[in-house]
Structure formats: structure tokens, C-alpha cells
Image 1 (cartoon, rainbow, N blue to C red):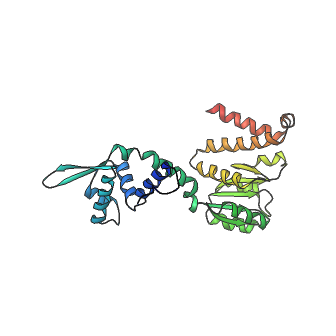
Image 2 (cartoon, rainbow, N blue to C red):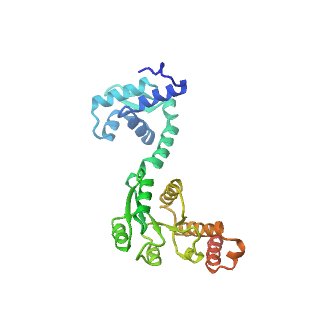
Image 3 (cartoon, rainbow, N blue to C red):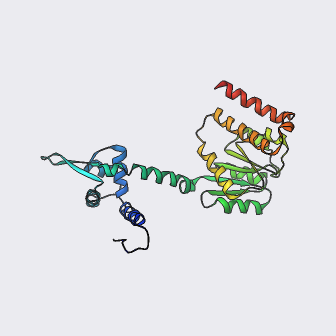
Length: 269
């Protein structure tokens, strides 16, 4: 297919040609298999790719050879054994695959990850759901009973309003069964920052802030307990510092305790 007559710059036409090549069902599969396993024989590829037939694999390999992305080497004539490996042009596609993986991680890979939005006002939870449902599975809770039931289903990140009716926040965060982001008012009492959460959102916030916060928490699921605690302390102290003066905070017991614990962690590393 020619894109020569399309009203787009030449680079755009080259992009379409590359996408057309990679949009063939098995071409990217073969390239990625060769990337991660190294040179492969025909039977190796056939065994490594479920549901592909010998004929389709032959056609795919021929197409990739014609595109200059792989090359075929004869290992032995009798019996005939061949080996396929990527060319320099094929290896130069590594960065493309890595960029696609990063994009997919940001925009596609979260479809099975679950976010719980918990607030006593159903209008608020509906708004939060609309904000993030294009990227995550979203559950809503409006009281303690619903909150407990949703947690039992398995949650990755909870956006939990500090005033959710009937919920003992301190008891919940002491277990922290999932990444927990507390939602507080515009001028929260500094004492609330004694609650051991992963992050804090201060009302009002916008969709982009919610999405960034959720993504950050999901990116941190493999961090150590010490790293998790340090991130939590930084989030809470930073929030207080963005609201209250240094003079006010110097006399606040909660803030001083947070800073002292943060210094302990820093000294131990």
C-alpha cells in the first residue's frame, strides 16, 4: 500500500509503513521472540509460538526477510537446518518496542488493576469513577459496610475520604491491605497526618492529579517496607509544609514526629 498521496509529511508516511509492517499478526511476535531468545531455528520458532502453522510462519519469516529485519542462515545442508536472526535494522527496533511498552504500561496495562473510590457522597465517587474508569476497574463505596465488602474482592489502590461514614481509618491503615491514598479537606488538621497512608490528596484536586497519584502507587508496589514508609512520610510532611507556615509546624507534635522518623530512616541508610 502506498501512502504517497496522503496530505501528511514524509515522516508520517514512513510511520504508517512501519505500522503496516508490524500490524501483521505474527511479525512482531517473531521479532520479539528473536530479541529475547536470540537466533532460532524454524522448529524452535514453531514450538515457541502457539497457534501458528508452518505455512503462516514461513510466510511471516519471508515477509520479515524482504523487509530487511531478519536474515536466514543455513546451518547444514543435509538434513537442511536453518537459523533466523535479526539484522542490524531489526535490532534497531528495540527502542521502538521499549517505547511501546512504556506507552502501554501508562495507557493499557492497568485495565485489570482495581481502584476503590470511597466517599460518603455518591456524586463524588461517580465523578472519580468517570475520571479513571478508562484506565482502571473502579469500585465505589459509601459507608463502612460497602467499604469492607469491596476490599474483600481485592483492591490495588484505595482513594479513601477521611470522613467516610463508619470507617475506623486508623484501624484500616494499620493493616493497609492495599495502596492507600487519603483524601482530606482543603485545610486538614495536622493531626490527621499521623494516619499511616501511602499518599494524601487535598481537596479540590483534578483528574490529572488523581491519575498521576494512582499510577505512582502502582509503580511502587515492589518497593521495600522502608521505601514505602519513607515515601509516606515525605507525602505527609510535604502536604503540611504546603499549607502551614514553618513557625506553625515547628510547634506541631504530629509534624515533628514525622520529621524525626524521616531523619531516623535517612540515618539508617
